[in-house]
Structures are given as C-alpha cells and as structure tokens.
Length: 202
Image (tube, rainbow, N blue to C red; front, top):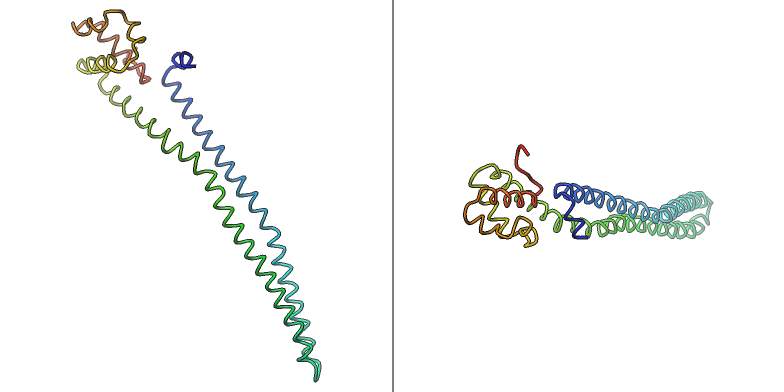
C-alpha cells in the first residue's frame, strides 16, 4: 500500500483526502438527521395520549357541568365527573411529559453520534491539513529564490527517506556540500514534490 501511495501525487492525495472528509462529515450528518427523525417518531404515542386525555377531560367536565344543574343532587353527582376529568388531565400531562423527553432525546442522541466523527475531523485531519498548508506555503514562497533552493535541499537531506535520496545518486550529499547546482536543484525538487509542489515554469 505504501508503494502505491508513493506513486500518487501529493496534491492528488490531498484532494482525495479532502473529498473523503467532506463525504465523511456529510454521511454522519445524514445519520444524525436519521436518528433525530426516528426518535421523533417515539413522540407520536405521547401526542395521542395527550390528545385523548384532554378530550376525555373536556367531555367529562362538560358532562359534570350539565349534571351539576340537576336540582338537589346535582353537586353530589358532579364529584365523580370532576375526579374522572382530573384523572384524564393527568393522562394528558403524562403524554406531554413523554413528548418533552423524546424531544430532548432527539437532540442528545444525534449530538452523540456526531461528536466522535467531528472530533476526528477537528483534532486529527484539520491539524495535519493546516500543517501541510503552512509548510507548502513556506516552500512555495522560497522555491524560486537562490537561498530558498539551499534551504529546500537541506530540508530534503534532513527529512527525506534514504531510499529517495539514494535515487539521486550515491554521492548526492557530497555533491550538495560542494555546492553542485544540479544536486541542490535535485534535492530541492525532491522536497517540493513531497509537499505537492514544483518549480514554477516546469
């Protein structure tokens, strides 16, 4: 896998990684929305319970009001209807409480589902991306300057794998020390390629 990755240009790898991150975030946002919508469905029984309880309470209260107009025994007959209406209101309140709980759950569960993927993006991918942008920006600023060529060549000697340096020739370090322009350019090009850059005009 590493050999294959080495053949892919750095700029292309960066682009593919960026596209993957965007898709990754989009997929998890869709998952979070799906979780929210699914949990919200749990509020339907609570809505029906609240509606039924309120309807029953209103009907019982209305019936109790009519019975209360009966002469002499009206007040005594009203009491059972009032108690039943209060019980129905309690059922309606329970349905409302269930809806509030589901609403809170519909916010908490998607947030939990998004926290880990977004944390990976913010604390793993983003710092690496910003570090690459900073390094590439510095290299781009000095790549066509004489002193910049020397700095890039020195950076290549210090950080590039030995296999990459060996491809430039067995005496690449000695050539650089002696100030060979071809060696300096080759080393600078090697460092620029590592950052996904190249000399202007090439």
